[in-house]
Amino acid sequence: MSHWSRFGYALFRPSKAISEALEKPDFLRTALFIALNTLLFSTFLQYSLSTAVVLHFVAVYALLFTTVWFMPSLLSLLIFRLAGKRFSVEAYLEGSYLAFLPFYVSLWIYFLPATVYHSLKGDYTVYAGLVYYDEVLYLALPLLFGLLLSFVNSVKVGTRATGVRWYFSLLVWTISFSGLYVTYLILSGWL
Amino acid sequence: MVMKNKLSQTWCNFKPFTGLIAFLIILLLVMWVTYVPCPDLWYLAENDFPCHQVPAVSCPGGTLRVSRTVSILSIDGVALRLEDGLAYLPENIPAGWHELEIDGRSRGKVLYVAPFSPDNFFWIWVSDIHMHPYGRKKVLEKKRVLDLVNELGPAFVVSGGDQTDFGLEDEYRNYKEAISGLEMPVYNIPGNHETYTDAHLHRYLRELGPANYSFTFNDYLFVTAAALHAYRSWGGLDGKQLAWLENQFSRPAKLKFLLVHIPLAYYTPCGREYAWIPWCRKDNYFTQILEGHDKLMKILRREKVVTFFGHWHTFHEEFTVENLRFFHTPSVTQNSKGVAESLFGTQEPFARGFSFRIVEVENGRLKSIVVDQRKLLIQRENMVNGQRIRILNEHDYFIPMNLKISLGKGEYKVSEGIKHHMQPDGTFWIWLEAKPGITEVLVERT
Image 1 (cartoon, rainbow over the protein chains, first blue to last red):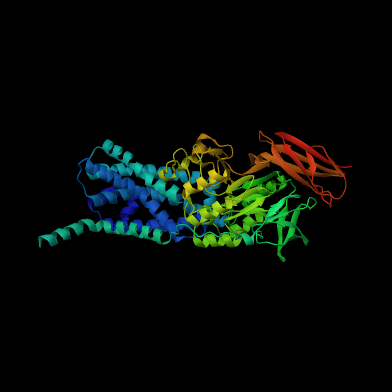
Image 2: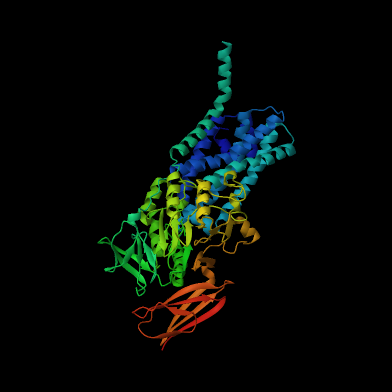
């Protein structure tokens, strides 16, 4: 399997992608994917919301979306280390990013069709749809599903990378999701 | 050799993470470089008041405050008595817009004479209109709210920020169209959506005028403050702005009002979505204006200022913090129910928007209510010898209104309310408090 194909597997066969990442990690390449994917989505999101792109907001959104994966991963990594588990940090981070890929894809599920639909129809912007016209439900449903899938995958990464029982990994990742507070602070405090 | 091997080993361990670290550093650098901490917001010079963007408002027999340097002030070519910057309007001046001439130079029609008395009037605060760049139906939806505001006939309207979604030119064009039906002055203040970048702020100043200014309605003082930080929802006031505010509020007035977009002081359950942000917390309340907050509160306490703000869209509460009154007003724009409310039901009575606030002043006393456009219907039906006005008020409280009647010259009697301010062309106004339910007003020629 080539390095790039593991991103495709992360969506349809996450176990295989995670195993691959844990066995042959290459986080430098993955970081390139993270940067490109995040910047592309942040730019698209800016245009999608307002039909304008402001560089400052692209950077803020990119930071916001990166923290969704990064903060819980970092927190869980620290907890496992404090619990005395020895494992490859590189493999762990790469595995956890692949675990979070369903969440990132779930964002596209709403924003891409909504942008095309509202642009063609010319009724209002995606921002207006989300904030004023109840379309937030169409975003929330795939987002919740994506986040749930990502959580399950993350627990799997914890189990496989550290060799702990699944319920211990579940506990660690449940605690680690509190790292999303940083995302909340960026979202509420900056945007 | 050992040292070199150790370094090489460390680099090998570190190398996989360089990409992510570089990415995060670049993001922070871009955010830092493109951030403007507190934009230099435009102040309206005292000598430039009144102007088309910030007109003057008064009433028959009322006063008009201008710069102390003004020596001659005329309305429609007639000079007024002027003492220390205070001009006195005649009792018989017709209501409506008048041309103002200051020291021999015309400013155009920048004085609105409202059909009220100096100590008994009401004004309307509309906020968070959030005009879209396109979508005809949606523009008309918002215009309907503003047309109702016009029908109620306040002395003036304050548009309290977030007139647009993203400060785009098309949004300003649609906003201006929506407010075009308002016969009275509209005082604009910017919101966070108009000040995302310096370019956005400059467009706001170009389209809607200055951000910091003050005006009076007789003995009542209104001061606007663009308490905004670019790029984010948080507000802030720099030293220059605080000094300016202190100077404005030092003027004598029966009641003083501060008009801002960002919430200055509140407590939960309102604004609960910000309650988890540590830098919002004060001892016994919350704030979203951070820089300069304490000094501003000190000024407001000293001058007993009443504050109006918007920004949150869904709340209608009045707060009393440190013996000061703060009013939040729900938005004109429609709001989504949101996921939680869709699942658990709508909790806030004005959460869906289409709302505005009426502020009634009666001999220095303040009374304020919120109106939902969908719960107030005013229908006019012309008859052979007059007009029938049917008011459907679905709120459970009275709503003040000042209905304009223009049926041509003649003598009229009205079945409800008080007829006042008769004009030479036969126009007059009916002041009434519409009770909950149906009120019918018959205007008949006698």
